[in-house]
Image 1 (tube, rainbow, N blue to C red):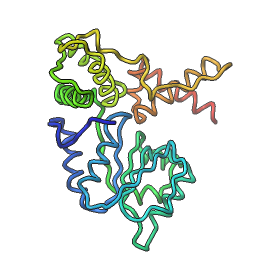
Image 2: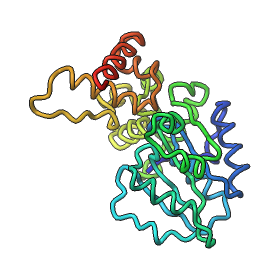
Image 3: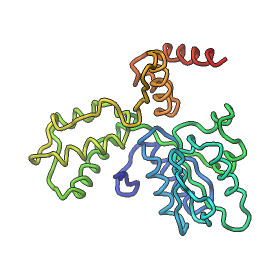
Length: 279
């Protein structure tokens, strides 16, 4: 469960404020929206926030990574929240197009989230252009947590407060060293990772002051797990790690290079090698 609340949390970051204000402006309309950003920045939270501010009577949720037995036929009006649109298979894209072309009054309002730039996927013929025009009329972008230094203190305190309420605790605070440790981390998992770290420190807290030793970071973010197979070559492991890091950062090469600990030039050369290998 995400703690991020666009009404309860005081937001100073310009980009996030712009996204919030545009969301409030568009919420009462039927405009199809696409929210883009790295994993864990709050895309789904913003999508649900828009839904709560709309006049829509019902919310349907389609997880493109795990569509399961989602029944497109049961969608009748309301709002369809499409999570990870960039992971939609060709079959899912076909079903979404059918929904978008309905003329019997049962077409839903589309609010989608994506890590990748769908426009780039259209150019690479990885996503249907006609569907893109139907369900991504207005684009919203959320920045990564590392770029929201002006909001970091407020976000930390808000998550700390909510986490205490959830676990029946009160009066907890971070020591100066603990806060410094939080502030110095680059947060590859963004707000989702911050929530996890703070909640764990609250649950394990033995006194009212949470020290730096209680701030524990995962060695690898959940969304950065790489599927290794027996017998896989080192070069193949490297390739998978690079490509999954790019996916996590919404194809932001500078950010990916930083997370991988390599130069942007090295990353560019690796990607060129992969392209040449395909050709």
